[in-house]
Image 1 (tube, rainbow, N blue to C red):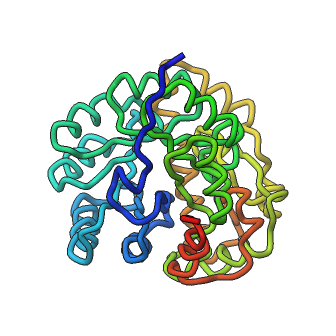
Image 2 (cartoon, one colour):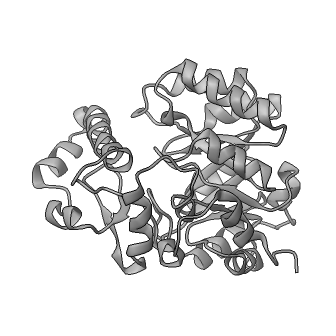
Image 3 (cartoon, rainbow, N blue to C red):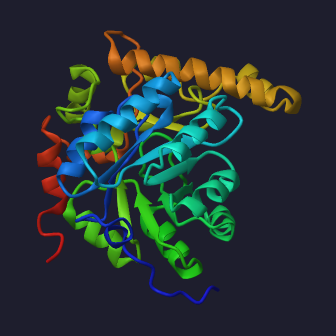
Length: 322
């Protein structure tokens, strides 16, 4: 067992008012959401893959920097299924974003390039084994993705995961999944978390550029309606169990499983599956379609209206310091 010192809380680590990251959400996070987060005392990140070209990615970073000097981050998919990884990393390093959140791969190169520049690297982890690996590589914090997260969720409950990591790591633990109120934040921090990453409840914000139908779905459905599907990205993804999802099914077909288990083809198949799946999710999120593939976590249970980001942040921070 590691001899644990007390790591900094996220607000102290980044110099923000509250220990909250508005989570990077594929197809959802945008510059309006990030700027609103920074204006209201928290930080935010967006996925690099939300921008198709390098010039669009650069423009988004410049837009945020020109409106605020507060810290924000970018989420980077670091495995081979992301053909844009190298170029995106070059851009993030060149423009010196405040922090990078790594997902779905080995963050070694990101950490080695960012640490000398003071760019913090937070690594998504779902278990202790991987968390210890990224700590040894020099990660500045881990984002503990639990089984209540939206999108790519883990398998361990929030309390179990935070407690396990707290007992064995010496870097800050940011809990991701299931957060919808100041009470939730206080609870996870009482377990030893240094802060939280909050995504799902911000989908139903005025600033999110998804369809009104998607936002309304967060109000109409509840936690019991969240299911995992293996058919969209090559990794289990949590979605709202709409009639279309029920019709499509959530388990990969025998042919999809066979192709995924072929070692020689796996990398390329995963890229194709991920691309096709994410295009389907994009169509559902941003355009009128009967194919309702809406990513979300069980925190939708606590979404009752579509509100400005400012109000949602206030609901998370009011009474937090008491």
